[in-house]
Length: 67
Image 1 (spheres, one colour):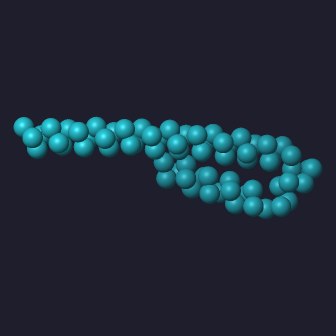
Image 2 (image 1 turned 90 degrees about the vertical axis):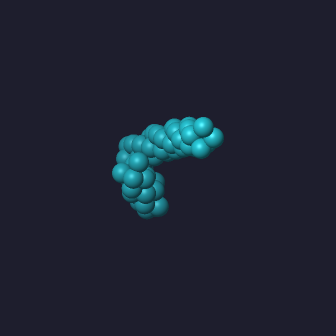
């Protein structure tokens, strides 16, 4: 996930450069935006999975403590 976060930061840095919005860079802009969307979705899914696993761990810990 750290690699994805790092890559997302790189993409956001690219998007902060006004040159990427020039007509000559439309293909690059499209590619960067598409990758940004995919990485954002992937990170959100990973975070949701992590939260679900954390909840399961907490439930197991509670069950063990109450056993």
